[in-house]
Image (cartoon, rainbow, N blue to C red; front, side):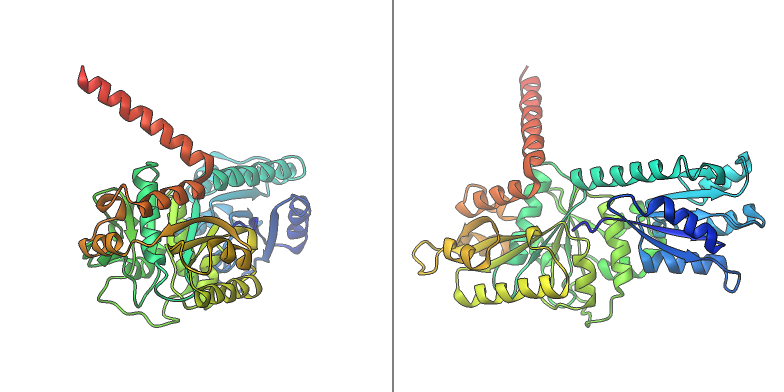
Length: 405
């Protein structure tokens, strides 16, 4: 769920802060936060703490009147994974010398402006940054959370099956993130036995980049990446710091086209922080009145307590049976959500696939359940996903024709 771009402005004088904020405050979809720097605490600790607290998409930093080179050297010590996606530097002089530019680049600054250019160049620069961010989110960085109000609705199996379709049929780089620290099943369902996983990645998140992160991720033979808690571990509520999880999600969304989140059922501060990063939430219910009532209660909590817009919530009815007295249409009318599809009850195929540690798409590729899951996966990625599938199909046909010559 995109709540708009956020910029953090940092400067050494209140007048300078007001001047910079005045140039940016009227840009649509840009939320401005500001912090006045002082010499009472170390610069590195102040900037780092503000970035971790505000979690901005952009940093606008104005150098002080002192030794700017030493200031930039100190800023370069902030770990790369913590830095915002784009950083803009404002210098007090009339020109930016070569040494200053080199130090600024080393500290992660994408653009440098002299103070005299802030009224002419700064607003357009940030309009472009907001536009670039919006285009990136629209094309990539889909974060889809699968949730169930109670156990037994098949939420984890559906999340894994959708991840399999996205990574194989649509050839999109996809990661399945199992966030249940007590009863997560994704490693077991895929016949994986990792020695380190999500807990260890969170412990070292301050020093991780996208390359180092691969050491914590497992990959299935079909190409789906999985990250979760090692099965032998049991985490208690409150053990994970929300700030660390957010930094991990930001790192993952820069690396994968799709994040599939298998959510726990406990709603707490961590749950709320994760939901802030979701672009689509899929509620999974069974064809039972109790399941629908629990689903309605969960939607109310998400809307009321976590400020989740209803238009990002979709519905999947699992274990569908046309002979049941409550129909899919009845469920959709009660919950008033976008219906992605209904999956026919198929206990045998799904049960055997889980016991074998195989995706349903490999064990029973022609089953009614798998075809429904494929339609749901296509609906989640929209037209772009279908276009990619058509291109991949053409590519495979051409390869076969070449091989047959």
